[in-house]
Length: 439
Image (cartoon, rainbow, N blue to C red; front, side):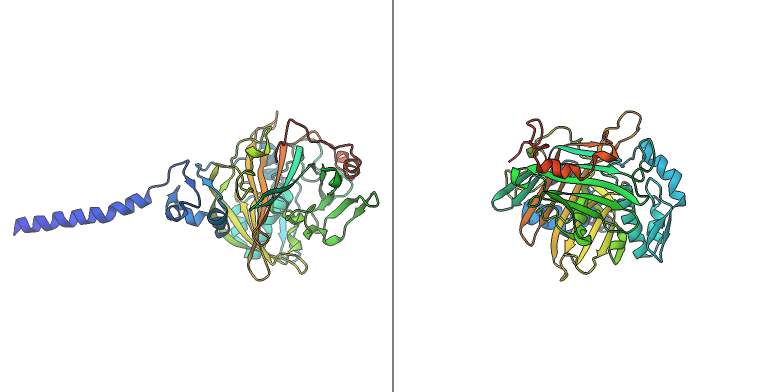
C-alpha cells in the first residue's frame, strides 16, 4: 500500500511538472533582436516581450501592416526617454501655473515647457479633458522640432504604389521656428503676436514643374486656425488659403496639414478628444541619430510594398490613446492618436472614415539627437521616419530629410513667405549630391 501511495504521489508530481513546463516556456520572453514579420506573426502573437504579449502591444492597424504589407518589427529593449535640461527646467518653472479651463477647453498660463507633465493629472481628469491635455502637450511643447529646426539636403517626398514602386520623387526643404515657449536661450517669446506659437515653411524645389509648391504656416495657441499661404505659379503671387486649409492635403500628398508629424492641430478644432486610457505598444523611440544618409538607409523603396521604413529599433512604449472626433467638413470621421507618456510626441495616428473603416496610418518614428554644447541631455527627439499608408487608395507617402538639424541657428525673419517665391524662381533649386540620393 505504501509503495502504491508513493507511486501515485510520484506520478502526480510528474504530471504537475509536465503541465507546468509549457506554461513556463510560454512565459519566457522573446530575446532582443527577434524579428516579427508576416511569416511568423501567428507564431509570435502569443509570445511575450518584457512581460507583455506581442499581440497586446501591436494595435490592429499595425498588425494589418505586418500581415498584409510586410512590415517587420525587430525587438529592442526599452529605454527611458529623457529630455534636455533646458526643457525640464522650463517645465518645472512654468507648469505649476498652467490651468485648463473646462468651459472653454483652453489653457491659461502656459509660457514654456510641457504644460501638463503630471500623468496623474491627465488620467484623473474626465476623459474629454484628459484627452485635451494630452494633445495640448503635443501641440504647445512641440517635442520633435525644438526651438528652431532646419530640414535640408533635401527634404524628399516619395509617392508610392505598393504594387509598382515609387511613382514620383519631390525634393525640397522645411524650416520651423518656435516663436513662443522657447527654452534654448534668449527671449522665451519673439515675433509680432503674443499668441503666435510657431512659423514653418515646407516647400518643394524640384522637379522644376513644382518648384515653389508648398506652404508657409503661422500656427497659434489661442484656437485660431492657421494662417496658410501658398505660391500660385500661374499668377506668380503668394496667396492666403482658406481657413479650412488645415484639413486639406499637403502639397499633393496623402497627408493632411493637421497630420503633420502625426498630429499638428489645436485641440479645440475637434469637438471631442477622449482619453481612452494608457497602453503599451511596440514603437521605435531610440533610433540612431539621422546623420547624413541616402533614402535607401531609411525606407525600403526597392522591395514591395516600397514604403516600409528601415527601422530595427522597436521597443515597448507606454502611450496615451486619444480618440479624436472630427468637425463637419473634415475628410476623416475620427482619428486615434497614440502619444508617448514620457516625451509628448504623437507616435502615430489612425484615421478612419465616417463609416468606421480604417483609412490611413500616419506615423512618426523617433530617436534622440546628441546634445549641443551647453544644452545637457538629448537636444530633442528627432524625426527618424515619417510617412503615411493609405489603405483605401492603396497608396503611400514617405517624407525624409537628408539632414535634420534641431536648434539650428535660424532667426524669426528667416522663415517667411519669401522662401516660396525664391524656390519658384529657381534660387533654391538643386539636390546636393551629398544628401538624399534615392529613386
